[in-house]
Length: 240
Image: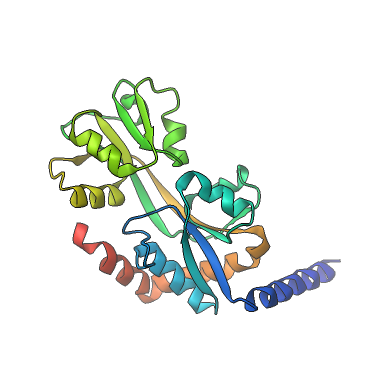
């Protein structure tokens, strides 16, 4: 029975490989418009994932989808992968399969124009808080906050912070500093300690689940041989 199951799984992988080979391109959804993922597919994650797929003989195309629709589009099979999400998304989106090696560690922080003592999510409850729609970790941890502003565009949130219409904006540390730099809001800084630090993962639609393990191994190989660090340094080093 075990041999039969292994043979069946092998045949599924082979036929799936042939199906993809006809096009040989996997389309990965991104909701980032930042140094992590750019329209020219030159962002940090663009380069990391395109290289990982190249190493297993598959071309990856990064396709922009607004944050709120990105997971739905991949879960519905309209796109083949989701670029960067926390672990456990398959519990809500059952057609997603997590690639078992992280893309990056993302630090979620509060940005402010003045020093505000904080000690976790709950310490922000009384503040005027801004978050971007579609970031599940931020939505979940600010649920019920009485002075919460949710917008589709993070730049608008940072502009509101700059004009003292918000006390804090919750965002990833790396992406936040890119916005601070581009908007020239030099007085905006992050507050310590980070609210949460999470490993982030690529997800693929279950039709391509056979790709998950090979891509994970390609990512590990990139971390071992220095390719991963080189890409991170070349794409984000100017912010450090």
